Length: 362
Picture 1 (spheres, rainbow, N blue to C red):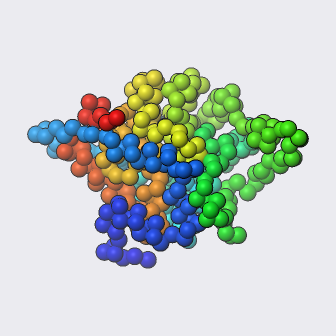
Picture 2 (cartoon, rainbow, N blue to C red):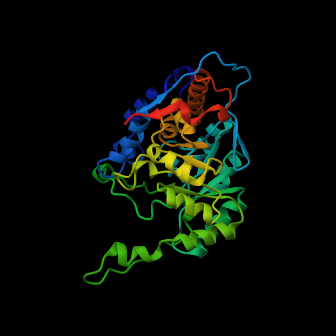
Picture 3 (cartoon, rainbow, N blue to C red):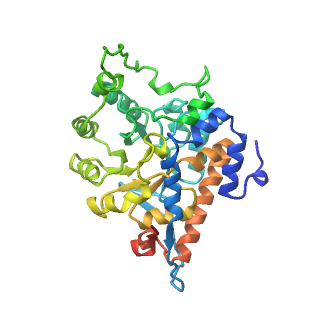
């Protein structure tokens, strides 16, 4: 356990220490992407192309990063993105992550593939009250998982729609990544995975077996109507899909390409964010993730229309380096950098951050 004076001092140092300390298998799982990792790199490169216009000499006293999303008050416009199997990085797993987030009054979205029971995580930190769903192969099973989360105290659901099959992750394959025997998605234990017979000659395993168990828009509309709590759709990259989400009553959308871990050569999330916001209007809750590594990146995403962002890999690195304390420190560094960016741009509140402050170089 690191003492506070032994913690990394910068976000970049957290990344370097985490990368160097992880096993090759964990490094491949948490830090790599699909295929040639072009989308993973494009997510980060899009923020590098962003240019911000400072606005000095404005009244900045009493400024704040506080905001609200879906009527819920946030200390800052960031949430911890759902990622699986935290116990690969720390013995307390998701509990350490949730407590680190709670120390900074930051909300956490718990993954359906959590390695700790959802009731224990929710009890450890009240700010962990958003739950991520995957489609479980049928309406009945998906609703059962949603009701488990609601009964445990989770009040907002995030349905991930962009990973009906796993991406081709070369680095994971090359590293031979496998879960250890004592690790599993414990909250999914009661759900038996579909069993597929071998496809007939001339058939495709993907299209003639798996595809028949995947959801469509009617299924998602049914879920949104049935659960009677806010449901956000995570994995939107096309403006017409965002508009469809609005039409079926989704509480919001999350512009995401799964951190570059599913379809390589998908567009960078920051590049498509403005067109999606334009299509659904500035008042509709559009969140985003992908490529956010610094507080200044959060500023850029907000300027281009996001109501809040989801943070993944920086939190992974904090957890790997120093557990709960590392998660808390990474979130504090991100918020501090956001505050510096806001002050230098003359923004005393999140609402002061406007599109004219940022442009993306081609």
